[in-house]
Amino acid sequence: MRISWRDAGLFLLIYACWITCSVGQLMKYFHSAAVVLILAGAIAIALVLALARRMQLRSAGSLHWGWFAAYLGLLTALYLVLYPIANQHIVGVGSDRENALVVADRQMVHLEYPYSVPSYLGNPISVLPGGLMLALPFYLMGRVSIQNILWLAALVVFCVKFFRQRTTAMAYLVVLILGSAGVLDDIVGGGDLAINTIYVCIGICVFLWTFDKNPNGWQHYAVGVFLGFALSSRVIFIVIPPLLLAYLLQHGKRSAAIKSIAVPTIVALGVTLPFYLYDPAGFSPLEVAHKLDNTGLPAEIIQPLVVILPVLGILAACAGFFVRLTIARVNLIAGLAVATIAFPPIGVFQLLGGDAEYLSYNQISSVFLMLWALDLFERAQSRS
Image 1 (cartoon, one colour):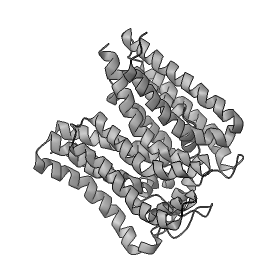
Image 2 (image 1 turned 90 degrees about the vertical axis):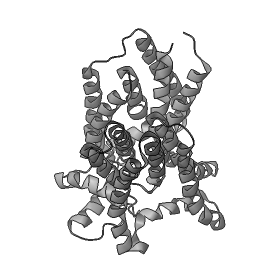
Image 3 (image 1 turned 30 degrees about the horizontal axis):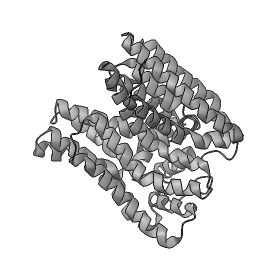
Image 4 (image 1 turned 45 degrees about the vertical axis):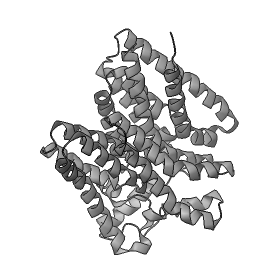
């Protein structure tokens, strides 16, 4: 089986995405054995891609839905088994991401300011109001982390729709979720970082699909409202609106593009600004910038980086105005724009000997980049 330079490059990108999603947790739980597992990961990913390619070349790329049901069932079983262990803090102190949602949603239910109380680890609430509101129904059901299973099911359906071959969809799901220690740990432990990214990614693609189908349809505007709430989940998603505008202007009339981008933008601002204006000093999602303090860099460097990195991320997203965009390329540029903000401080942190667990924040860009890489991988096989 002949391997092209492009195939090799795509493998390296997918492997790099997997590493950034996995190495922190592998080092946390397996210590010196992590190196062996990282090398084993390269072999496993190569086998997954080779199997997907072989099935596509043999026109056997259409997996039965039963395989996806089994995949979701396995993840649900892992959640049911590992969630109690993670929340009993048997291994380390655990993550406070779910607790942050519980604390903030409890405050909202009691009509109190959600950012006035920290998590059990004493960390400020970093989720924006849209993320709190999307988690609120599950808080009222008694367990916020149930949303993780719902969004994993949505991701399965989305991947089957996004890729031409179901084998590619399964490869994405296995490598990104089941095989990535950081993503899997976050999801089964009740965290929301990966889930925030998943529903933003799904929202973006469905928003653009409905625009291409009917920019004036109610479905498009309904998805736009949801996307507005989704974008108001993490500050880093500030890079997304200009990229969406670039796509809309290229694929429709200017008036339709402006009306379309206005919906998620107005919703995101409408959800976020009241909480910020109520107590600007106490609006803790903006304190995420203080994570740069942990890099060990001097304050005179950190202070301008707090502004420079988001600006660079937005400029990277604006690259969409200068290339012909497809939905796959939107994912590529979104991933690069997010990486522009996240990679530099985390990279410096690692060079200075920081905790490798911080690399899990790079899973945000990996969700987007791996989607583009496997789409290109699939298209290359279809032309073989």
